[in-house]
Amino acid sequence: MLKTLTFFFILVPSLYGQEIRFYKFGSKRVKFYSFAQKRILISENCVENKKLASCDGLKASDSISYESLVNVQYGGANLGALICKQQLKGKVLVGVRESSKSENSFCKLRSGSLIDSGTLLFYGRKNDKKTNN
Image 1 (cartoon, helix red, strand yellow):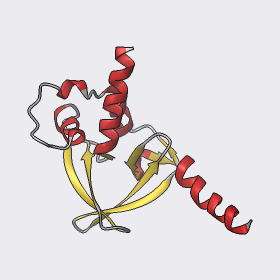
Image 2 (cartoon, one colour; image 1 turned 180 degrees about the horizontal axis):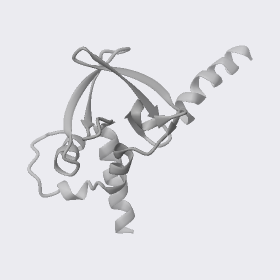
Image 3 (cartoon, helix red, strand yellow; image 1 turned 45 degrees about the horizontal axis):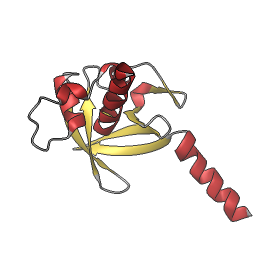
Image 4 (tube, helix red, strand yellow; image 1 turned 60 degrees about the vertical axis):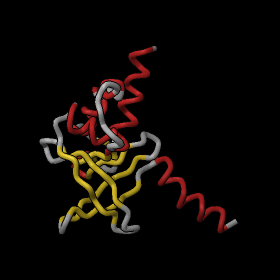
């Protein structure tokens, strides 16, 4: 019973709340929050009191489109990175996660906020479904 409760309290925050992750960009260490239910991985400057706050990274996720990339020749490029560069005029950065040493691409916006390129692709597709229905 104790093992079940321990598992529950470890699993639930990562599924329903947020998970904190650290990525390194060269020598700079950046704190990110992952909100699994919303499928968002975003830098800490977009989070207040452990909840998503208003920032350009979140505002951008409302207006982006995957379908606008259909006629673009991208030759195997990361589609979230293309959304970053073409639609948001952001800069694509690659960070290394401290815990696993895995790499991830992020979009750095003018304000300095960073949003995961996979998040951008997810919301680009989601926004297109809204407009097509």
